[in-house]
Image (cartoon, rainbow, N blue to C red; front, side, top):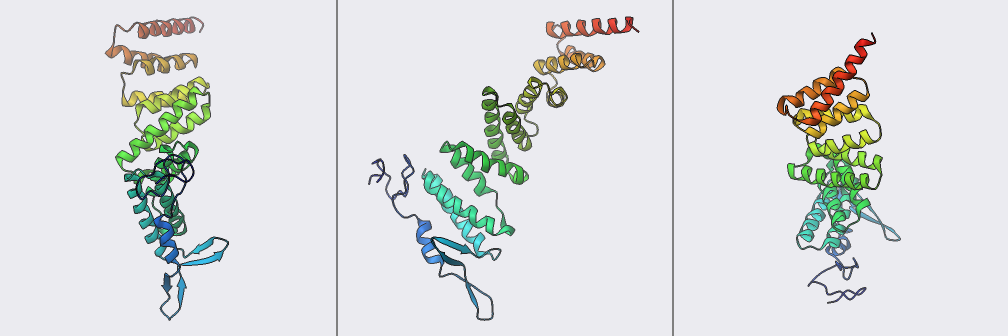
Length: 277
């Protein structure tokens, strides 16, 4: 079987063309929703309300907060995972989007995983803006629910976006991406450092110092961070803090020439200040 749009060969039973994204045959979701209009909620007094009401013009209204939405959403989500495993990403996207629509209707049963996996699908399809939207929602609303692997994946995703934004001189975007990564990876030294360098470049020195201090709390032998922190403290005239920081560096690397140069500079500035008193 070939795609009706691009003539690409399709896998057996494939719904979508993975080359162009064209839907070539009805999906299971189409077949399910053809029958969903027969589902009803029994109110107990002989009254039944249809689970789905056809409003015409292709619009449908779903019952909300009643349970069926969440059950159907979970089922669509399971179909999406199966489609991902078959590498049928466009089909997975259809299932998972409908799953999210139903979860959002049933506000008592919000599930972060459809957003997380839809974001991953968008990433695989290189639809970056949509991926960012879903993954940002996951980080902002469900960070504590993430597994270790999911959190690491999102740290990697947003850190890379931050690096790319920085290269393109989109510095505020870079800060936002790094901040999202730090939200799910609060001890990710590389990401904290990256954000600090952007703050430093923009002249937001107090924020840069905060990030560099955090890095040194997690890894106190980072030569580059020590020098960056000391240079900012010297610039701000905070010589006591600068000397304390450089001495911490010399304690583990007493022959480090960059550390020694900065110590001499701090001592020289301090002497000049004292002579002026």
